[in-house]
Length: 602
Ligand code: PEP
Ligand code: MG
Image (cartoon, rainbow, N blue to C red; front, side, top):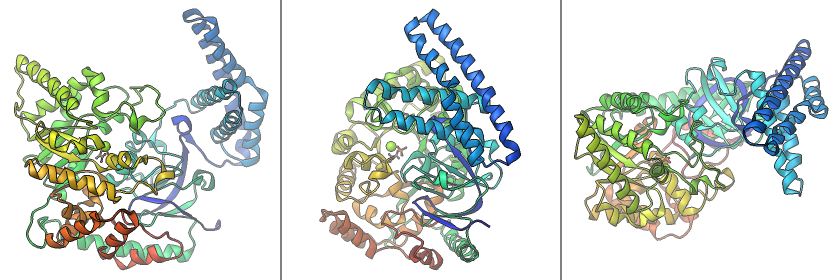
């Protein structure tokens, strides 16, 4: 058996999984299967490459002709030049060399050569020549598509019981994973607050990210243990580690069984204050889980995941059908349907967005929807139709201030007018709320309360915008701190504004699902939490250990601090008890010290 290796990264979705590695890289967003091959397979692989290169060259020359006829000969040159790359003997020679020497499949070798060429181009001072890197990548992608016969991601090719090892998992690919087939995923890149990580938590799929170059170190077929509690990945674990994890798994199972007893208990503080506990959902199965855990309703239904698993825009009818089923499942409890939040790290393959150096500061959420009134109108009509039968509210993402609220309200009015004219039923008093996730909206919370029916604190984005730390960028993960004093002050001021205006406020960012923050958030004035279904029991458990007076004292103390370290020290003093095995795993030399804000243990 190969030697054990240990990698440490960021634990983004807790739980422990064992399985066999399946390595995939998403170079340029096309999935590249990587595997070792037998010596007898080498010639067959090279023949596949040659066929694919011939096809790529033929397609490029045809494309060049077509562009010459439709656009112009200068433009056509681009594709003629790309055809030369496909025929280039240095390129071919390098791919063949890697297949022969490293005994890997041709797709893996191709990805490596494209990466190498791209890096070389990137270092050329001449900007024109530097830009040619994109052509090499383009040719690489085309050859890859010819090799794999498709350029999409097909999760059914992943063997049952696999642990997916990827460079970066995009939310659209993550949404296609089947928890029965894929037990966990580990990746080179990605942070705790990315949409992929949120999705992993909602699927209860253990995941560890920010494991630089793990796709190069792990081979398809390696045995893995993924510890999504402490962020450690064991490759070909030795017997001691295997035994230790068998014991840890049994203890965590016991801990979960204990927590399960909390399921029927109300979410009230020790001194009797009720705290609403709702669930975040992205798909129908989440509503099922929310009901199992006795959620008070769905506090945030992210509609974008339903869009990202399709290849074209869902029609109003398609949207209505899915949302109606979700609302019916939680009826008579309420469901908060959020308008499509595309942009930032969430893209749709069929809706290309203008290139942006900084997509989080570009077109996203309502700003994008208001530029595409047909998409907004169809979605609002679907939401309104669901409201005819079920308690639905409409939530606006990435609101910057009152202007966007007014503009969306005008479109809601238009949708209501159309539905009335068509004789279709809807709730004319449907509630409309705004996400507070952009600092300007947090500052204007009082003004917003006058024109919306409720507010929802989206700390995932609020933290990134307040602290100027991209939620997707692991190099600034140190700066991305939900418990930064500046964030806590804003949360406190929004909670105060909402209370003074008697405007309902829910917190639905990932911070709400981390039990180490529960007491502080209650102290800051939050009385409604919306969290991933898998986090509900732990948060309920935490709520039931809070007393209002202690929570307020903690909040008052923390609001006096100006440093993250001081807040961490205060939170650490009040850290909830953890199961023995998990605590032991955290303190072994193989695991990093957890920081306040690490995900809960289930
Ligand atoms: C948030 O920003 O906190 C939020 C809930 O929205 P999302 O994570 O979908 O951007
Ligand atoms: Mg957000």
